[in-house]
Image (cartoon, rainbow, N blue to C red; front, side, top):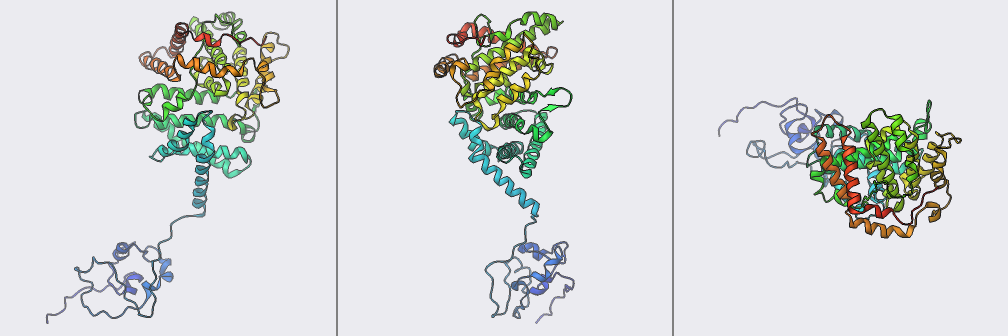
Length: 495
């Protein structure tokens, strides 16, 4: 019989290998045997020595084989040798997951927010559009799960804000809403800086839309988060962030329409909006026409540059045309389009607090009274109209009379505003929508915007030219397609 091959004994092995009477390779921080069998090693976790299961600590029966640890058998599954009287457990004790109390709480909060979003919040993001509601409920979360972290965070942020509308003082919801939106904005901005492409266009559009929802809804809690709706120097603070966020949606759409126009997610959401048919001719007596009285004199007196005069006049005309269009079909969600469709010049006029721009904005908020039942628009009409009115002198004979319609609407008590108070016949909404669809859908307006955006890429020295070109193109279309007919018949000025 040949002599036994010499070998080096393992004297500093881990406790688990010693208990099992097998050779330990003494590799730190986890020996080879423990790594192979997927169990904890006391090299890495010294605290487990006292908690080893009976399987690992039981005294094995003497082995009858002298080469049980030979290379030929080292790949076989471990067969622990135990005393016959020792019962074998049906499973091994797994390593505990490194979950802290804080991480468990965060997981539960995310589950809570996701559940609330998919069961309740998603239904509030689409106004009278079952198709869009299904997309927000099912398709959008699935898209977020593909790696669009900024979209996932945006969903959770909006859901947290929705829950907070029911529990305004819940500190966990307040922190969740702020932190998830902060994360959204950071990653969203980083993705935009890298460029929009076919793979991220849908996620960026949806995230931009959710940021706009969040910006609008956050106004509800302005008093809780920053003390008041007033700043210390200028009184009432205009909600300019609404315009910036919705204008951001418009910019994303315009710059990525080459991919979005084929999207089965984005196109149905956009098509759920009523067709945008505007009368920019100024030849018809529309409901809000009085807001344009004296616009020529104003632009001549306040704008020295001829280009600015054109931009200012067109900005006012376009904004009033959108008001007239939305005033006829307010229950469709049409008033929301105002924020995204007005020109950049109009936002600048608001920032400058031009009285005409403020009066137009007050009328816009009056239109939102019809959507007061939507949680992220609840109370907006009354709060914002009263805030804007506070910026005017009641003795101002030029502008105070033009604020009477939004004041009357904002202060109206009741579930449904009578047509004679509103100034339009509710029964005509369906007919108007049918007529509007004959002249194209909202997609046609997006196509126009995309064309203008593409043209502007080659005109770096004229940043405001897109406002001029878009205005003129819409004017030509309204005259050629007869869009002005939608605003005729049944309309009358509030004065």
